[in-house]
Image 1: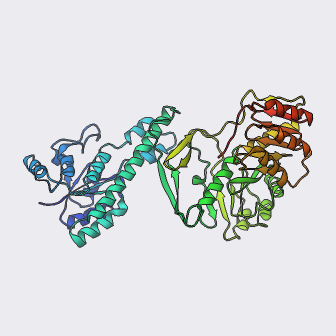
Image 2 (image 1 turned 120 degrees about the horizontal axis):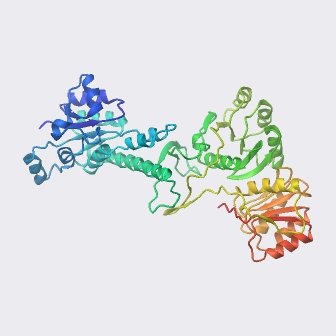
Image 3 (image 1 turned 90 degrees about the vertical axis):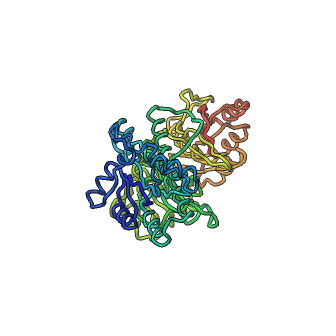
Length: 513
């Protein structure tokens, strides 16, 4: 019996050459709609699928392959006598190869102002059905979804007369890999259109591989980078950045760059952020980015070495000249002046990233992995509760309020327990990742390189005891911002009053683990 292949593809890359070779190898080709027309126009004789189904394509092509004459041919177990008997009785031919790729749902949802009806029309039904059927029956049916596999299949048929079990299994796995991704995009798009912000019973995230990394957090760990393939998430992320210069990004580079970008989004005024080991080592705002960077460098000239520096304004030559003076892993900015980029590019290993934007949205989850599962939450986009209050006898001055808000934005992005001391919109000391709050305060004070008189302090969570306030008061800190909510809040308030410290309760906590 002549072997048969179904070819029905949206992406026609390489299909002419593949079909020609199949014909030379003695295969009959069954095809549909646009694919059949394309093959015929290029001199390849094919069988119209309607001649197999004995039924016309209907409903504008929505129904053409959904038929027993097709699916029985795909799903038959060829060493099962009853299956073969049934096919013979019903005059159905076994189908040996299924070549299908799908309507461009992903490309469609990424179009600007795309109509919802157009999105719906690009949900493929017949294609996934044939693919899944052939993948289920991979022991007997070869299924191809990726044009990159045409050569592999032809090579094995030419050398061995058929495709090996191992290759058919591999190809079937690729089918389920892609169809699950395809369905995940549809599911997430529907939720977005419906404005559904609940946590679904079953959560799937469409992740597309960006690149294989040299290794993970450490050289003995394998690593890879995937991006979320949905049009409605923020474009201002590391996956959408453009690398203008330097070596490939590492696993840790990507983590640190993400932290820098997310912190930058808190600020509208010219701001610079320095990140080291996924924590800020310096943050400052200024009248321009040159001033902001100089302040950041002064925050911690030791830790910034080998770190990541990010800006929310274009980098000019004057700033580039300063940046070039020290070793940095990465510089991130919305853009670079031509001469600034030329100057920085002289450093061979320096990675330079350009961001598409610094927009802020809250439309997708924050996901953290644990062994055996995932923790899913909303992104922490809220800064204050509307009812934040001054709880001390002294009210903060206007300048203190500016610095308190600055410090509060920074502490939100520091690993808990977190303390940020700031003055003149510049971090002076940062205490992060401590197992108790007083240690975080002491760490921030110890690491400060400046006189702390008149500085302010931000704490990501409440003070369980008054000791943190007392430590701040002893070094001249004059204002504190913290969530409040401890059963010992009064002790902290009383300590603040003794030291003439103004203190604000925000009513909102910013743990970051």
